[in-house]
Image 1 (tube, rainbow, N blue to C red):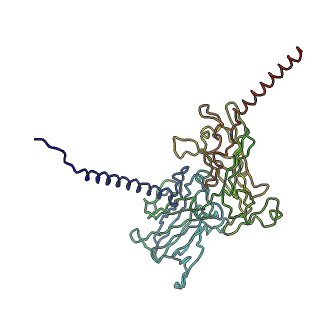
Image 2: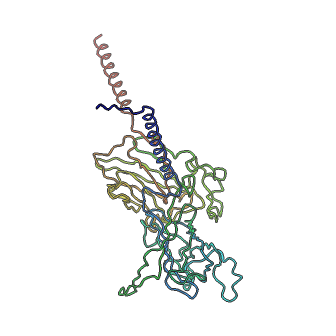
Image 3: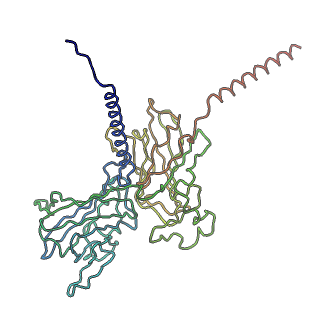
Length: 461
């Protein structure tokens, strides 16, 4: 018996169309999700510091009749992003009717309405308290371990011991056991401006402490963590620094791109030769950290200049200069991060501190530069003293080293944790055109030969 394929061709076409449509829908869905992940400002992913974050840890040290006493510790685990003056500001929301009875090592910015309390008045009765660090020099009875630095936190990569801040808080009208306590929610962190996004509080294994003689271990009654990550897109729609290039083999100086940091401050800028630049009080910062910039075409507070200075047989030398154009801000314990393939072989850094960064262990192309203590770790306000500079000696890898196609210039540059705007690649200083040089030399040779021939002809005649 013979069977023939009697499949309906129309049905086959429908199957192909449905398969094509479903495949197209899958591709569209994948691309949409990918775009949301990439473009979402809350994603807060830094390719040069993929695990960097600020972790806020709450350790309940004791229960009280109506709540608990907790030690709150803030650890800056970011390799090169610090929190500068006027320091961090931490906020959250209570889930119930909690109040803060007392604080040691920090304070809330507002007390709130505590009118219902008759005898003892709480430190803060607000549903959403805002906490700031105390300033240095407060009385000893107000101090707590790692407190009272004005909210300034160093980066983990630069100084781990100074990257910690802590305070103690006594909470009332709260739960009095692990089962009844309600974790605070809606955490916010400003450092000192926007940019940080905090996740929810999560209960973690209790912190273990060693006694002073290190012979006994104690532990917190309860511990929860809050993790905050930084996004430059949330901090500002414009960059806060730019980069310019120059080299010994090309007279052209490639400047920062025009309006690299936005030109919204151009109406209020001050020319470098203006009398206003020397006016008393010009360097006094504002409460909202509004900058007062020197008039430039790029209008950036910070410019980083990378100059390819010298070329040796086995080495080459780079000069790095950082200039401050903000009259109202100096930068203490600043950091500069550069990404370049030859940073895997740094021979010597002359007047900056240097630390290689290895976000991916197999790739060593990123390094952090910072000022030397009591020498140039303070970048002064705009003016004659508003710059720091250093030179870097790098050993060549003959398999990869070249001056062609802008190889000698960095791929990425960060200042104080924010990525700087680089010039467009087609503007990088180029090597002299060898073809043009050769044509000139050939022309000179031909002219010399003709001159010799004319001389011979005249002598014979």
